Image 1 (cartoon, rainbow over the protein chains, first blue to last red):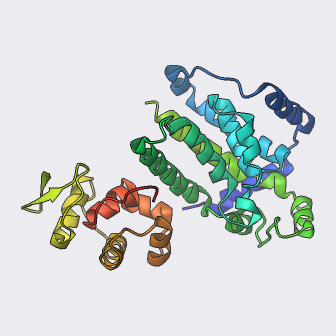
Image 2 (image 1 turned 60 degrees about the vertical axis):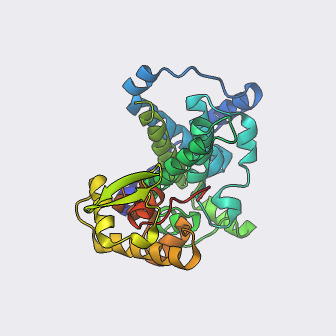
Image 3 (image 1 turned 30 degrees about the vertical axis):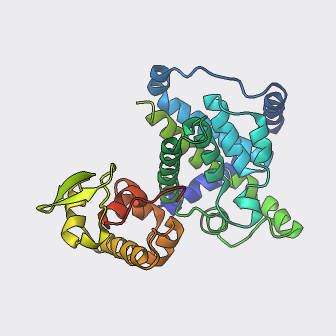
Length: 209
Length: 105
């Protein structure tokens, strides 16, 4: 069951955070220019530093969401960078996915995480149905946990119940986007990417046990 | 074909333990499957999902998508995974005695 009071507190913290926007932009430009560094994942080291990794992924997802103004991209980039997955082309492909095309549908904190799941758990063999089913089941379980943490899976519901406390779809119009921005929506909306990326990273790390 | 003993009787099952003859299902079979997954008591929430799965399967010959299951039973995804340890596809469908869902749903 979502703890709305605790979530509201975290939303307020995000709204009040001092963001290093130039530093974050430089970081993303570097990733765009040089690509996502490949990593050799050391299982023992990762398991030993799990909490530290989860904190870092959560923070980066919040920051990337803020600077890209895109929850799906922010979530995916934090996870892909942490685990050395995929390419910046995938981040580009995620451009229309916040609230799936700005319609208030599935939150980018989910979409971005599932992209990382596909890259990590999916198979290079397109006909490996076992790997496909396994990845889908993990994804569904992840979504259940996400819903448990935030109370909702849909952008419109999360904005209404957790982020702003009222119904507003920033994708509806220029005016709605302006209102969302003025009310620190982009800062506050770091919450679902942060929670989603943290949960997804935990699923990935726990699968290494 | 593999066989499995459930509630004192032997039934044909697939490689994943899903009942192959849905018409032979009864509530004791659901309870037996649940016990194998560590669930000792089936609640109203379990039966709402199991009964909907059975009704849907008997009407359409397939399992409903999770979205439909959630909407029609008023059960959130989180609740579904709490009620059924391996989720709606691997646990709920099995306990309901309907074939294992195939493909992406």
